[in-house]
Each structure stands twice: as C-alpha cells, then as structure tokens.
Length: 272
Ligand SMILES: [Zn+2]
Image 1 (tube, protein in one colour):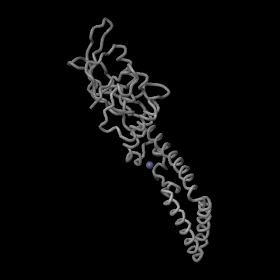
Image 2: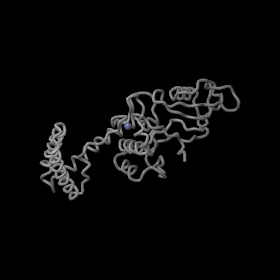
Image 3: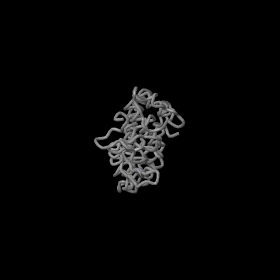
Image 4: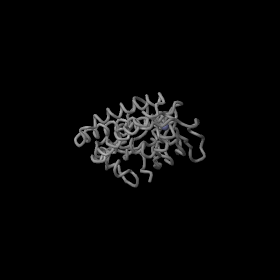
C-alpha cells in the first residue's frame, strides 16, 4: 500500500489512483467483517459516506449492519481512527466499495498556479530565443518600448497633450513592429506581456482568508488533471504523464496491471 500513497511528511494520506488522481482510502458501500480476540466475528460494518476536510483529512460515516449496537460511536470517523480500529479487529473486506475522489485540495491549487507561472517563464524564454533568430532587433525594441512607456507616463503627468499624442504614435509604431516580428516567427506576442492577475487571490489561487479562490474553482478539472499528470510522472515517468495530459483520463480504463508494480494491489474497486 505504501507505494500508492501520496507523498507527505507524516500521517495517512489519500490513495493515488492508477489515473494519478487522489482517492479516499475506503470506498463508499464497502462492507467489512470485524473480529474479536477469540477470532469470532463481532459484526459487519459498511462505509456509508465519506467527506474530506483540509484540517482533519478523510472522514467517514460508518454504520454497523444487522441491527447490532454501533461499533463506531463517533461521527464522523477519521481515517486514522478507522484504520487503527480495522487493523485491531483484523477487518476483512467482504464487499468492495466505490472509489470516491478527494475534492480539490489547496495544495493542488498552489502546485498548479506555481507550475503555470514557471511554465509561462519557460515559454517566454523559449520564445525570446526563437524570436532572436528572425528578429535581431527584439532587444532594442523591448528597450524602446519600456522607454516610451516611461516617457508617456511623464508627459501624461505633466498634461503635455501635444507630447502625449506624439509619444502615442511612436509607441504604436514600436508595438506594431514587435507584433509583426512575432507573427513572422509564429509567436503570440502576449507571451511577453505581464499576465493579468486575479484580483481576489493575486494570482495564487488561494484567497487571503485561506479559501480556494473562485478562479481556481472555475478551473477545477484542469487543476485536477494537471496534478494527476504530475503524480504519474513522479511515479511512473514522463510517458504516463503525457498520456494522461494528452488523452485525458475520461473514459480511460487503467487497471492495476497497467500501472502498478508487479504484485501491487489496490484495495479499492475501480468504481465505474
Ligand atoms: Zn483568484
């Protein structure tokens, strides 16, 4: 099991599925038989629901079957508590449950936003190199653009309208030259412009109050998929990551035999 848990410093972690996504350790609807010290069955329980909290991790509603006295009195039961109890009572799974995916995590949001930021920098650097081959004047153009912006701001502050309109004409010429050179090289000129940051989270994906920002929720699927690809890359190498990224995981049946090391097992059913 250890091989398929998400890496973190301590504590029990969600399962990393064969598709790279995070799943609850116990499937909903799963039934377990529990045993006492004399190896007699003391009852059967079922996982009736699961939930996730950033602070407490995986949480479960566990029902005792057959009208017997409740074995788990606390509600909800934490993953740590459930696993300890199951281990103590040598729980045997008698019916598999449905694998439930962990909801979007703050750590996934942060990783994605940081990843996008460095991708942007890498893309801009690569575009700069590509552009330099066909447009040697690019560095000069960038310098002229910055100077024109500063001069324009000064003229505007001084309310020198004649100078402002002259500078605007020059500025448009600089931008036009730059745009044409980029088009020739097959580069989107916007790669060199500062990115518009979300006003609610300043482009971090997490708001000041610690909540996931609405801009991240809007992009939930993409963030989930990006993180899944990142985990697969860590576990199985780059090809799997590219496979997930390009083909998507939608409708893709990845079995344990496909991706888990030989002899590896996954206690969850595939949930489909
Ligand atoms: Zn935001």
